[in-house]
Every structure is written in structure tokens, then in C-alpha cells.
Image (cartoon, rainbow, N blue to C red):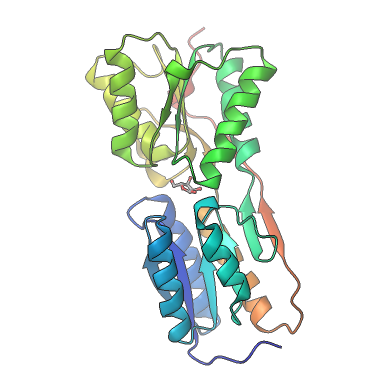
Length: 281
Ligand code: RIB
């Protein structure tokens, strides 16, 4: 059995609270934790393995009752370490490949397929792709979904239309600015998250390219701004708040259980169609 810890606190390790996907997730986790009498200690790591390691040690020394961890393949060493700690751990959002840790996951691969199929079915054929960081599992799965869907419809994957961003507004903006400067021809963009999609739209508008008349675009996450942005953004919805809640519920279940059973809950993707992909035909 796990030794009882009594700080009534939960550590929540995330990449970056400035990315608008995470506040909803954090809020879901905090609300669920508070209802059960736990406080949340928030730690931002920028997905950096050294920072993650430091925070894990810190949280453990503070006697937290459990840890929620958003890492990814770049965090493999830390995930192994977490699996060996005598404290319950739930990983979420980005996949933990240890098989030893409980996880709340999202089907990023299917989500990307929904996005790209939608672009193809609305008549777009030359689709640019802005991926997230290469070592992040959410980004790897979305890229795989993008490539496989082009393949399925016998469309070539054009490396000149493929960019690596870092899930920030700026990286989406830069990618499309570059694409426009190189005068590459494209009729759609799939961005691996909404912030990059909104940055991309900014670059298009700056060059007097219209969305969706000239270029259609799909994002990923469904942050609040996707709804309010002009034009509103078609996107793959992730229920970030519910994922945060679910992770806390799973963690609390583990705290009170004596078995070392590894749990998994999977959230399924949903495409939200808005103006940015409106059909022009
Ligand atoms: O916007 C941040 C992204 O990083 C999200 O799509 C989330 O799934 C994460 O991995």
C-alpha cells in the first residue's frame, strides 16, 4: 500500500500556462481537487526535462498526495522516475509511453484525421501543415494523422509545405510568412493547435490573403478565441476542462486504492466547423 501523505495537495506539472489550452485544463483540475479538499501546486516546465525533474523532486519533498504530469516522449527519463516514486501519478494530454503510469489521453491521431479529411472534402488539395514541437507526443500523433490522411486520398506530402512550430502564436505566424515569401502555392493549412492557426491567419491577412476565400484553415484545441476570432476558427475540440477534472478523479481514486492497477481514460475528438473553412464552391 502507498504510504499516506498528508499535505492535502496535488502537484500539477504543465508545459506553459501562457498557452490558452492549459488554463482550462488547470481550472478543471483545481475545481475537482478543491471539491475533495485538495489544493493544487502549479509548475510550468516549458516541456524542458531538466525543469520537470526539478519540480518532481520539489513536489515529492513537499509531501504532495499525488502528481498530475504533462510530459511527453522527451520526458521519458522523468516518466520512469515518476513510475518508481511512492506517490500516485496520473499523466495527461501528452502520452506517457511507460505503460506503468495511469493516464488521461486524447486521440490526437483521429483528431488530425478529422481535420484533414474536412479540408479535403471541402475541395482543398494543397494543404500546408504547421506541427508542434517534434518531440512532443501530441504533435507526433497529429503529424501522423496528417500524413496518413493525405496518403489515403492519394495526395502527396510536400515537405515545402511542412513547418515545425512550438505551439505558439509567433511560430504559426512565422511559418506562414515564410511560405508566402517563398511564393509556394497552397490552398489550406492544418495547424496542430489554435494559437499557431491564429498566428497563421495574421500572416495571411497581412499579405491580403483572405480566409476562407483564398486559404482555408483548421486548428486544434478549441480555445475560447477560436470561437471569438474573426473569422471564427474551425478546429478539433479538446475538452480541456473535463480532461483536468478526469485526471484529478483518477488520481484520487489511485490515492485511496491499495492496488497498483494502471488506469486509462481516453477522450475522443470532435470537429467544430466554423467560418475559416467555409466552402466557396
Ligand atoms: O496548445 C497546446 C497543445 O499542447 C495542445 O494542443 C495540447 O494538446 C498540448 O499537447
